[in-house]
Image (tube, rainbow, N blue to C red; front, side):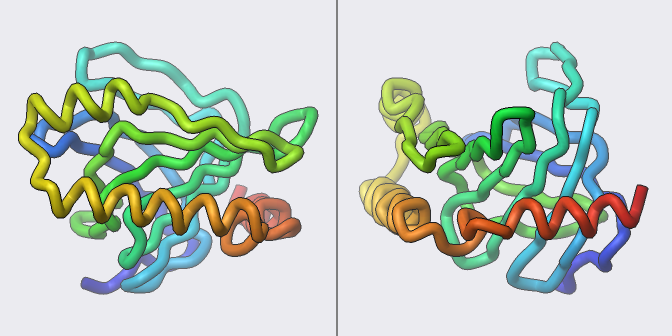
Length: 175
């Protein structure tokens, strides 16, 4: 699997464990693409939900995907700072100009001061029973959650102080 090239437009599709499509982001500009890591950006991007609802993102965002880690990170540039939304998910795959992953409901919202909230644990527990997640998957997801929280506390990876701003500046060159 080769990664997409810088400047390419791709879709992002999230699925649920049972294979059903969950959400589609119509257009994201690739800023860095390798077989193991994709960094993309979008702004005012059209999004389709599985139930047919649609909406458009409100602010520029830098998206970070890795083929090794069971999470992805979206850094949203807002007037009062950078907010992060982190999805506990399968590692991404890239095929047919599309970044694909399985969303496992657990999320972390990170505020500009780097405090954070864990979200949707009840939804995860419900889907874990409904879709019969294997015990090993539960361990993988919570282990990666711990790793993600370590990155947040240590301000590494996409949480490094200049990460989002530097990639946003690169995004502006493609507009």
